[in-house]
Image (tube, rainbow, N blue to C red; front, side, top):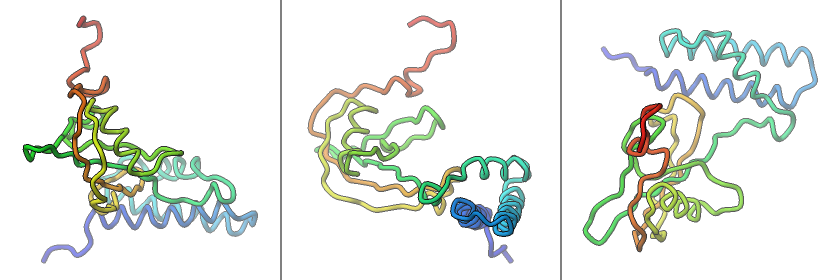
Length: 186
């Protein structure tokens, strides 16, 4: 019989507990409550370490979480927001790029920027990362990164369908296609 609890479940539950504890730490002045929230962080870190074969260690995870605690509203732990764009053209092709940080092939995506609507961020990311001008068609969906295997920072991804309308395909300066070994010449 297969285990009913997956590694992703453990990581998601660990992050949820850690978020609750860090938010509590951001809002309390009570020494007693601080001790309890820190204990919850240790339990959450133990769960995370068990799910990831021991790396990083429980103290390292707890220290990283404690370092991220803010005060009051700024301490309320919430997921970040990423914005992605599935861009199609008149030939039925979809635009993908190889990410510089992971090497994965993915549609253009980036963190939401203050002062821009999600659709504006999608258009901006496509232009910055590919040189392609695009216009929004519709919202495709909102995805929870943790439910799709993300092990780092909790985030939601707002994904749009965009239509290519112009521009010239040019890889971003951080893309693997534009990276060169140290000391090499172009």
